[in-house]
Image (cartoon, rainbow, N blue to C red):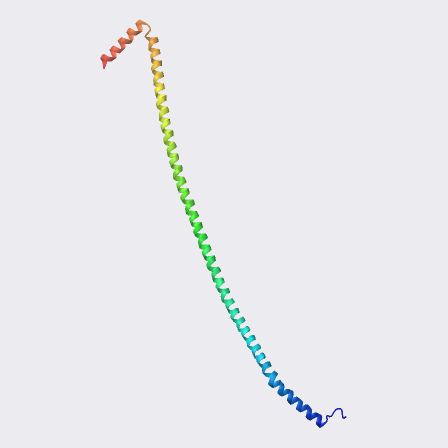
Length: 164
């Protein structure tokens, strides 16, 4: 049992050595250890605060980015609408111009056709009149080739003139 119960002298020296070690630790190690722990605690706290601020900034940036994206989409939609409206206006204007040009060409063609038709009719009348005169001339030559027929024609003409 002697091994289990310490001697008083051993106990005294153990307490003295413990107090010396405690004094040395307090003097040389305790303050630096506590200072480094405090510094570590502050750096962790600062890191957590920085992370928290970064998270808040990321949230703000994300919402700002969403707003910018929505604005960009709205502007894109507006530009596309304006482009469609401009395209429709240009197409409508082109159709009107094309219709006007077609009407102008048709009117010119009708006028040309009428002019050529009138010229052809006049030419045909001239040819018919010319042929009629030639035919009448030939008939009169055949009819008036004999002297008696000429005399009878002259008498008939004279009767018609005197009656009028």
